[in-house]
Length: 122
Length: 236
Image (cartoon, one colour):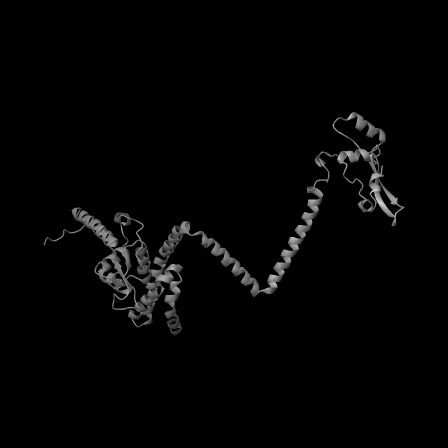
């Protein structure tokens, strides 16, 4: 299925992302995955505190496909032909980078206000 | 009870899927069910563990289904203005075909519908014919819209117009270009092969004929006029 053109041309128009979309983009930034593997990655990122259900996962993927943040990987490129694989698009990567930069500024601001401990210098 | 519940639970993913719009079913239905079944397989092999897993799935559906419906509604609204015109005709054709097939499946109901339509249309056509002939059609004479039927009544209420009143109207009222007078009377037509009873008029018929046009047949006894034109000409 060819990727649809994004309704919002500028990445900033999609910010801030919902936690589900952010975690899905983070999971797909490491490579294409099928739905259940995305959920497993999200569970691992959340440290096991939160488990993403199928409704949240596929509902988010439906909206992300419509916004051209992700697209479906071509068949045959994965090890399991019965499953659909998803991958992040260039536009999705731009949106993810903008969102991470925004969160980084938020965290930096929290550190300045001593709401978070200062990061250890490496 | 727990055994019955355990038998019903495997159907739950398909039931949960019904909470989502059709586009979601078609695109993600199989993946959704496979995901839910995988989660169920990973749950603890106890009734409590299974129920806890299903409770989490139900809560997930309750959170995500409204957003899926909002997305589907927005997609339909965006697609509607650009829908091709042929789609409207296709819809009409489908509706017509569906109606015909539904009527064919229920011939009794179709017969009642056809009878009701026939009676309604027939009654409507009959009433229209009467109204059209009585109220809408003009008289078959030139300047029929300028004709006036003047009637009089005596002091005791008896209908009629006396000859002096007629003369006063003819000579004293300028609103009329011409006035004629006639008195309806039934007459016997004799001297022909088949005698007949005719409706005729006596009086100033010549003036009336001039008023409505020389070619008009004033007497309503048209059957006699067809067989003997002298009936009209000699009626005065």
